[in-house]
Image (cartoon, rainbow, N blue to C red; front, side, top):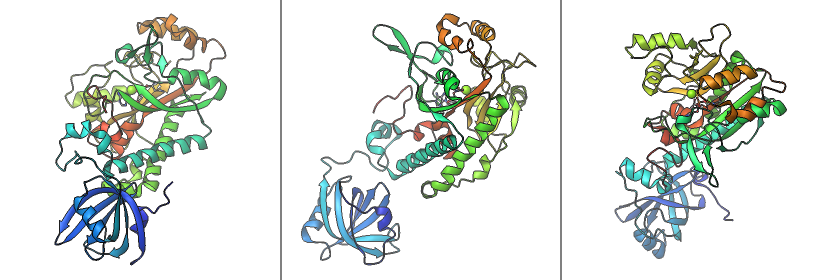
Length: 431
Ligand code: 4AD
Ligand code: MG
């Protein structure tokens, strides 16, 4: 493996240090007999200046002809120069091509959105996308740290399933050796089985939704952080959501400063400091009615409703006690008011909306059968899940957090697909 120095270090080097870098040519300018190359690696971009007499003849000629995104090795001397974009430039002595670009690089300055998405495999070289992906990694890592520190066991669940978790309308069918199975929308039901051995579990894996709605917040494949906790009730799980959510924001704030600054994002972690406001569905409905929405008791909220509702808040907030007809079959009806369930969504403020969905599960065998029927589902399709209520069933709660949704809000990205390396939406499964 190449032993090497990174751009990040070169930018911090002393005047006249002699340095060798490898990277890709992001940009090229000529100016009065000088050639300037912007050299990019995974840590940053540095200006490389070639001047005849300092750079050898051959290197100068190579630079004259080089195509953008060629991979190169550069040797030179560090000079602090306020005219260089990062205040530092490498005066090149020699330039060697490691991997040439065989054609002109297709991505140009004013490329349209569609072209960029068609060339996502090349576009992801951009430092901006790299910064978003680094923050994404920090976000996920921070979640794992918090969960590990709080006694959660990471488990891995199947993605091929035989019955819906979140309603049949968004199931992707798969031909499984001449049998129809589905891609999972959530691993919740498997987690509920796992708590009987492990008590506090989490999973981080893709969920799939055949969601045709073309909004700025829907993907057909997303990364789902799901948590399930034995003996936890609704209030307990909301506390876990708050603390985990805050620790993820803090993690990005602490460890993603360089990237946040590069992206021009001022993140104040106070916006995510618990406790979060809690309102009931009925109160949320009143707010929406007062804003002129045509919505009635029992309806789930769509993207428009969530956007407007979330504009009323400055912190993430919970909407609790949703009508039983608005949400999936497994939510526990509230013993005090059985028209609603003991569940909660966490919505991100400022026009974003749902990031977490969760709540307390039904743990009584007969009640679960009744709720399955009420939802038009066949209890026979849920035999193994019903078994969990037959042997030592206990109260338990859990939730699912959409990683891309959280990043979308945190970084104020124009569209949820900007949170993905290779987004999957109804219109896009390539590249
Ligand atoms: O609210 P949802 O549907 O809840 C569940 O799937 C539960 N079974 C989770 C659980 O309790 N274990 O989805 C949870 C979260 C949403 O709040 C949202 O952040 C994300 O998953 N999500 C999506 N993200 C992107 N694109 C989509 N189409 C999404 N659908 C859900
Ligand atoms: Mg939901």
